[in-house]
Length: 224
Length: 349
Image 1 (cartoon, rainbow over the protein chains, first blue to last red):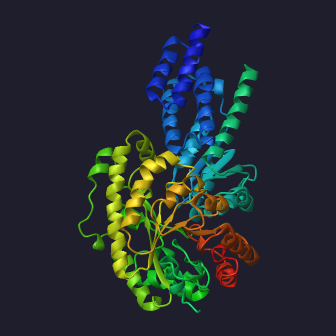
Image 2 (image 1 turned 90 degrees about the horizontal axis):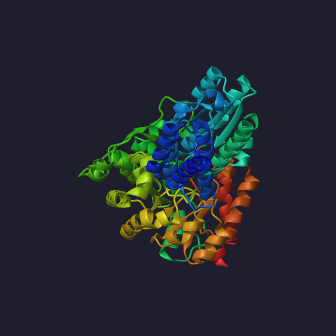
Image 3 (image 1 turned 135 degrees about the horizontal axis):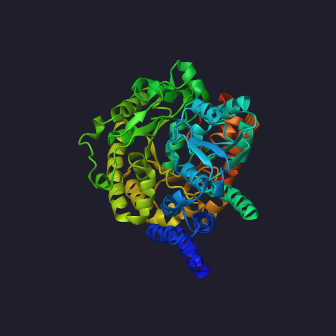
């Protein structure tokens, strides 16, 4: 495949994600597979740069949650087609993460956006969903021996449950890192609850996830 | 001039002179201390008018909070329209109820969902109405009796999948607007039922439309028309609350026709007053969790003074008070309002 064609397809994937144009991403992803472009390359240099730009637009308040969700749909449409063609060793398992929305809270948009970035990055994600009983997080962490647990809450009234989960996980597995996120969470609260990190909104969560991805991509490029 | 809490709350809406700002809320304000005093369990109070009224009165009786407000959860309206609520009866931890079964599953149902003929008897509307009547009898001469509504967009997010609602707001705004318009009609009817039961004021809570979620463009297209319709139809004191920073949409909020705007601590109040001037009533902005649950009485007093100096017209938590608020902090919030509510009140100066 010519360099020009590679560049063209990567641009199509990227622009398709940015403009939440699912059809365009699907067409480009199919072309990637049919024409034999490396799928890993296409994900990391097409879809992810697209989502990085979406993150920037979100941060600049050009895009809001509806746009973000539509971009995410476009990204997943491409990922679904290309993922079977990505070799595990190319991406490697970057880590294991348990994530979910705490009991009492049924808002999972923020969690889903963060999950998407973990999916793309090749993490093994155990998504517990929403309204998850507190002990379930502790059990799943122990069962999967995950490196990371991400807890999300959209409402002040449910955020409080995070404190117990964090304490229980840390008691059993002090090495596990815990990130909390959601509208009511602040640095002060993260510290008070004993979390290792926090993302105060979807933008920050996305940014953190993107930073992580960029690091991963560098590692991948160095090893290539 | 010695005013009752009720006069203090209502006179301000009526444009009459008051001695100081009131300390009250248009959102949940019951405490674990109140539950313990009565020996009630939180999951049980949502479906029982007497328990609901008893619990609502505790914040006044125990701390001097200047209102009594029902209900405590956000599921009443969604239940009227066929959703199922989860009160978390078997969970040790105290939780607010949530919706566990959605009523609308596809785009067609967004247009065809059924509104019951007799809303006064639908879901828990009769329970809340009865609780209002009981409160009226118990402390209604002294204290303002309040209630709230979950506003159309937030309600729609309970009735159907929220992801779909967000995307359709963009892709099919007409479909979404038609749905929200019908929801506004339902809410106006519920408000009239509560008013007839004896409620003094009402807070309309559009917490699903915060500025980190929806653009000011979407706010204008999808949120504002329905809020305008509701506030125009409310013929008794009414407040509009939206969570988050809200600074981008404060002029539009002010344009919705509510008697007062409610904001939380993330709102930059200085900028708000710059944008909408000194005339509109703004209630806020005590942090309902960090200040009331985690901090001490001195911090509470500081937060009250700061809110007054920034120009709020009621000391009013920016969200439901988390019930595990320290009793001494709730008391300190009321006491600081009494102490500084005249002297530091920007409007008085």
